[in-house]
Image (cartoon, rainbow, N blue to C red):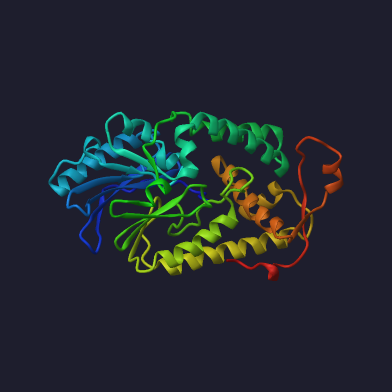
Length: 358
């Protein structure tokens, strides 16, 4: 969960794989409080043809599209060959969150590149308006059960929708499982959790981790009740799957923050953070509390969009513990007597020594 303003650093950074592929990291200001990166890759296909591949497109918000174009111009000058949207062969989307695919509406107007995404995030791109409506409704129910006031629920839903109003449903040319989880020299691994269809992408000894693994911050979690194949359980299982699949990775490039050199070490740090947070939740629930009350104890007085992120993060950890029988519901009789969503008060049933992470 991000709780402070991020400003995109200036300038394109260049990396090279152990087989000579060139990777250009292009910084974007995705939203006023969120910076990140997309990647332009120049790599030879097995048939010897040079492929130009864009990994993620940014948010499409504010000046992000102009920054994308400026980044491509900078790559053209550095690589001493034209690299524009018109020249792309593929656009690979790591996952269906707006800060990673929102720029696709703009990119599509200027390129014939084939666009790919995983099956479980396909509708986020191609049935976007439907997805936005359904998740907004589920969020409102979640906020009610979390104990959020009606006025704050209204503001949070407005805030959630505001950052997503620029995108329109856009076609996708292929899905990753349909092509055998490989696009030319790029190999893909499905890593659900942060989003249902999240993938990490391997090119030689470099990993593009999207938001699955980030430096300095733990990728945001939300309860699976909002979207199937998300949630902390899926996320931790995906971390375990990545650890063996990514053997030999020298460099990990994420959608935010700085590159990671020690991937196994970073995976362990993230696991430990979640173990500690789960223990905090159990300790806080020595007395029955709602998700909103636990969220305030965990994250303090956050503001703006971070209120929504804190509630979802807390909800994911409570869901994980409740699924495993480590938490109970204190006001069950009240829930049994009503048909409408009601604030739920959770209580601990055991100590954190029962937590066994994957």
